[in-house]
Length: 130
Image (cartoon, rainbow, N blue to C red; front, side, top):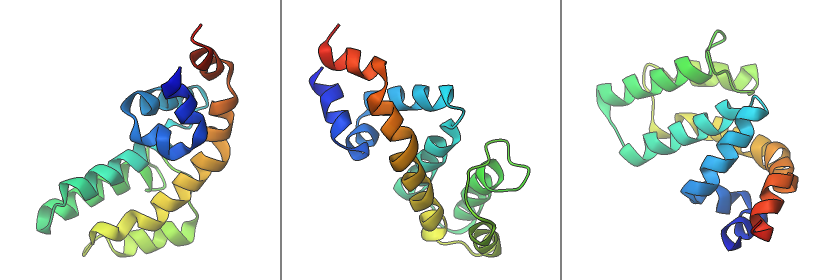
């Protein structure tokens, strides 16, 4: 129950807690929006792994193919200007290539899905300890 109460305080508490992230991911799957958290996690892992050279290019292209290409299987909701700016940097990417897209997706989760997540009856049940 205490853990679930912390999740209600901020999306940061949800995202920094593996159990919270798992509950939030399941919730997003039910909303058909899990690609947002998956993208956010992929970018976080990219930065944590800190690749360079050809490995960085490969990892960046993989994230781009999965989440940003027009025919991507898990297309995230970012505007075409941002998609184009990222595409233009694919040949010589830096670790910050997805920063703006990650901020957009974070904002969508925080203002949309997270608000519904903390109001859902299942999280209320966790808080009460039923």
